[in-house]
Structure formats: C-alpha cells, structure tokens
Amino acid sequence: MSMSKYGFSALGRSFTAALRGFCHCVKTQRNMRIHLVAAFHVLALSGFYRFSKAEYGLLLITCALVMGCEAVNTAVEVLADGFCPRRDPTAGLAKDIAAGAVLVCAFFAAVVGVLLFWNLAAFGRMAGFFARYPWALLVPAATLTAGLVWAMGAPGNSIKKRKL
Image (cartoon, rainbow, N blue to C red; front, side, top):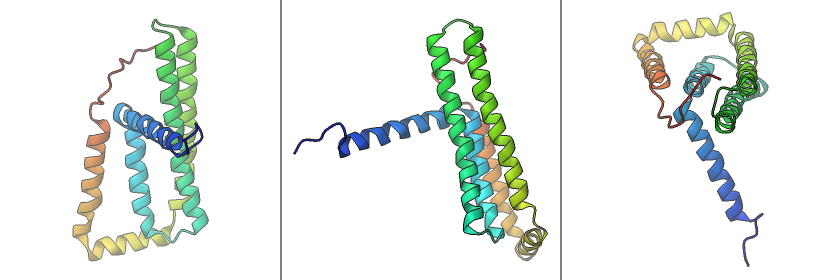
C-alpha cells in the first residue's frame, strides 16, 4: 500500500513544517519569546487560583491566540520582505496592520488576565504560601529573570530586518 499525499507520511511532513515554522518564530522573534515567558508564568501563577475548566480553557485560548497572531505577523513580515526587497509603503502598511492585530490580541489578553487573576482570596493564598515558604520566592524570581534574559537576547535571525 503506497502512501498518498493524504497519508500518514504527508501528515508527518506537515507537522514537521509547522514545528519548523514555530521554531523559526521562537528563534527570531523577540516578542514570541516574551509571549512564551508570559504564558509560562501566567500558567504557573494560575496554580494559586481555583479556576474552573472553562476559565483554564479561556486562559489557554487567550495565550494561543496571542502567540498564533504573533506567528501570522511574522509570516506577513517574511512575505513582505521577500516580495518587496526595497522600501515599499504597501508592504510596510501590511506589516503595520499585522503588528496591530498582535497588539489588539495582547491588549485583550491583558484584560482577560485582569478579569481572571484579580481575586483577593487568591492573593491571600499566595501571600500565605510565600510567608510560610519565603525561599519559594526564588523560583519565580529565577524563572522570570532567566526567561526575560532569554526573551530579550539577540535572536539568531538570518533574515535582515528593515523598516518598510
């Protein structure tokens, strides 16, 4: 039995291509790394909350939406830079619009974050936990510091960025 273009090997190739694209975004896009660090810490912080399955679902969808939009923004930038090697106002506008879409998603993700995380009872649980185990503050401090150093580090980008 031969594998058609719809078989398992084709599915594996499409997943490999998708993973390659995601890795490219993480490697070359500082904002994608910032989104990943933020998502990691938001999900870790959520342990102090008693979120329902629906609230966790909303949190995960919100994180995915921001990172997915960042990936689409990167794709628009790559296409605009590839098809318009010189400064081009239309390509620049397309890039600005894609970046604006990320901004909108990030803004509303922050609103969702405030709505989900502004909870005095959970603040009390966190304060009580860290009062009992003050050394545990080293974990978020270390992971946040390491995450931000990684996120803000120089990307391994082989594509030259230019302002269009």
